[in-house]
Amino acid sequence: MKKKHIVFCIVTVLLSIGVTIFLAWGLLNFKLKLVKDSGGHVHNRIRKNKIIRNMTIDENYKQLINAISSKNGEEHFQTIWDFDLGIILPKSMFVEEKMFGVLKYRYRPNIGIYNVRVWSGSHYQALSILATSEFTSLLRKCKVYEDVYYETDGYGFKKTEFELKRSLFTIFFLGDSFTEGLWVTAENTFVNQFGLKLNSKGIHATPINLGVNGYSALEMSWMLEKYAPLLHPKVAIINLFPNDVHVNYLKVVKGEGIPETNYIEMFKYLQRMKVFCEKSDITPVVAVIPPKEQFG
Image (tube, rainbow, N blue to C red; front, side):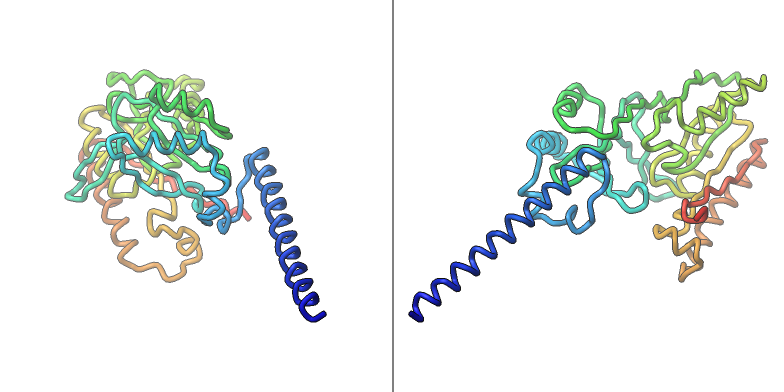
């Protein structure tokens, strides 16, 4: 009798575990389907769980990632967008450049780029990839929620609708992903819209987008000094965001424990840009972009 009781208990426990796993798996798949259909975000614990990622991985996404990774031993940057979600940036899109003795990167000239969010099976992964025929074909097989295509010009700048004519009144826009317009088509960037607004007022000017995702005051200063002698801007609009002081921009907004050296570094290059503009007869304008939390 005892033996039967033990067997019954074991079977009951196993069935309970099985039912729990079945229900949990069903709930997870239901949640993932909602995210896939809505283009929303899943909790970081799901995104970062290797077991879930491996069990749910989408085969078309896997082929795309394998193709990206196999290109000449492709290396990637891991950076962030929207301040908390990862985006993969392949180094093949960039040119290495020593900026004031520090190794940095700028976009390669005359390339097409996709900013996309691709369904991986467990979440939407943000990718920034070259617009080659191979990657275009692989992307078409994937579930893509956002797809923004743009091109760089002969200098590696994100194009606008304006033809770059040195004879015209030119305006430099310096900054990071806000200025570049990450996830925004070229015609919808505020750089392009600024130019259209001026033209509507009878002011014929060429806006030039020198913004690059991840740039700080150091890179902005280098870009200004590098390209101002070539393109002769009359105005340089320097766009800052709190993460130019520290990667945790909320700490900057709240004034929580940011090292003084971070501010010293930023103001050093702002001062350098100010001096350069004075010598080059360029009007500098500093624009501070507020984070969304300051509007709450």
